[in-house]
Structure formats: structure tokens, C-alpha cells
Length: 295
Image 1 (cartoon, rainbow, N blue to C red):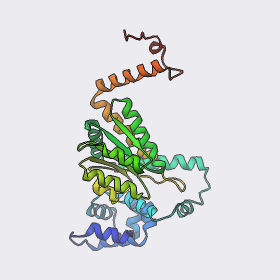
Image 2 (image 1 turned 135 degrees about the vertical axis):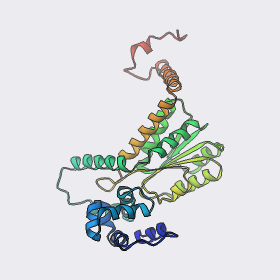
Image 3 (image 1 turned 30 degrees about the vertical axis):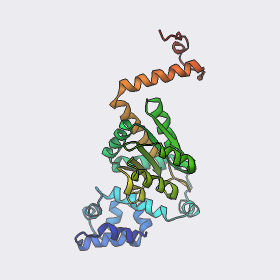
Image 4 (image 1 turned 120 degrees about the vertical axis):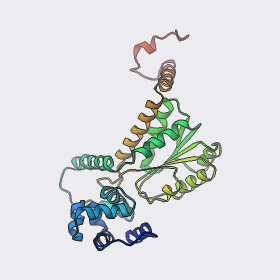
């Protein structure tokens, strides 16, 4: 769906906008690349309006302000490009590539701080903590935050697993889940068909669905009970994982804060198993010396 068609769908059924807002919308549809990187002031100057008109236009489309709308436009713009086209779009920066990557992630985190729906993150954490079992799915590089959530969540006492294989393994995992269990889906940029189908199937089976994505308009958001939108633009042809990983840190921290005693017990049991299996070279000596009867 083009930027213009998407804006029209957001405007469907709403009252007409004034001449100033119309000029802002014209800029967004005619210059999506410019709009995806411009400040509110730059958009206002291009549309010959004041900044407040840009803010009101964003709010008329369902966003709190320009940062949220700009994030959606940027991700939609990048989503229409191939990996090669994205690489070309980011070419020409003479600054050291490592510095560019660090600057990019810093900008993403700053943007997320302004646009993140904290209540959605808290609701997602609550759903994971309360569910009997949680399955996390993702594809490509975004399997990394899925692994992080499942690994640390498991250490914290949750029954949680991840799947990046798909196919019959994913079908078997979903089959064993029951209504009220939780499916968490990670996806940015291109949306694999099997991920969307799994999310829709989970919804049909009565599972609670959590979605971490880079677009409010993602088809995944339509089936998500808890939807968290993060920036994902990378410095080259691949998306940045930093915002999603930061959200996972926040989810895990919220889970820990909600039941610190339970997490403490789970961690103690886990470390006892590590000690018995002699897994860690630098496990604290107090664990290594603990008698096997636990006294």
C-alpha cells in the first residue's frame, strides 16, 4: 500500500481537514522520503504552515504527535525498498561506519523514548507473566531478541520457549498451547507469510498475542492483543535490533519487579543446577562449595 493510500485509509470516515493540514498531507504523500527524515519544523516550512498544524495533522491520523507519525512513514518508506535499495539510500556518508552505526542506534533509542507506548510494554509483560506457557517466534536477525526473551524469561521461572525454525516444529508447539497461553511475535521490515499465519492461527485458538513490530499498520498489529511499535532503521541494508532489545530489557525488568521473590527462587534453583553440572568456569565459589543436600 502506497503512503497516499495508507493516509487515505487512516482518514476514512473522519471529517475533512483544513487547508493547512491538507498541505501537510500533500507533503507526506508527494515526498515520503523527505517526510521520513524531516523534523516537524522542516515539514511545516515545506507545507507553509506552523508546527502546531503538523502536530494536529499527526493527531488526526491517530498519533500523539509528529514523531509517532514520522516513525510510521519512515518504516513504510523503507518497507517499500529492497535491501539493495536501502543500502543505496544510506550510501554517501563519509563518516566512519562504526560511528555511523553508534549514532544511528542512539537516534533510534531517542526516537523510541519519545514514541514508545509504555502501557503497551507493561501490558505485554503482564500477559507473559500470567500465561501458563509462552512461545516466541521471529525470523531472520530478529530471532535475537526472541532468544533473549525466552532465555532470561526461563531463568526467571517462566515456561517460555522460542522457535525460529517454523514448519512442523512450530505447528507442534502451537498445537500444545491452550487458550490463555501467550504467543509473542517479533517482526520488522518484510513480513514472512508463515509468521503472519502463525499469529492468526494463535488468535483463532484463543491465545493471547503480543506483537513487537516497526509499524502500527502491520497486518500483525491487527491480530495483536498487545502491540509495541519500535524504530528499526539500520545504518546500512539491515534493520537495527537495538530498540527491540531495549524493549525486551524493559519487559524482563517489569516481570522481575512484579514478582521479585519468585524470580529470586527461580534464579537460585537455576544456579544450583549450573553448579551441579559444573557449567560455569567463574560461578561463585559459594555455589561450588554448597553441599548436595542443599544445607
